[in-house]
Length: 87
Image (cartoon, rainbow, N blue to C red; front, side, top):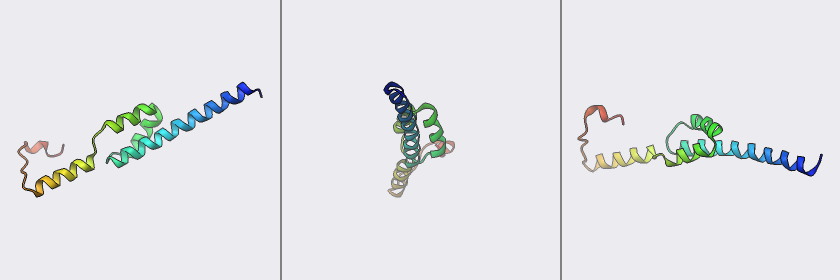
């Protein structure tokens, strides 16, 4: 095996390992933001770093829910239509 074949094979191994690592990072980031980590893992495998950027750009569901509870505890009344409550 020549040096160029060896380095080519190592490049492929590192590339695949990095792609799988990005999928795990995507899954963890999605879970921490209150999203389904398994679905985001598959998106991370399919799209790689683009999926990681997409999940990083999304809002945090847990923080939004926490801020809503704080606002309601301080007397804020939701003046939106009833069908908007699930958003």
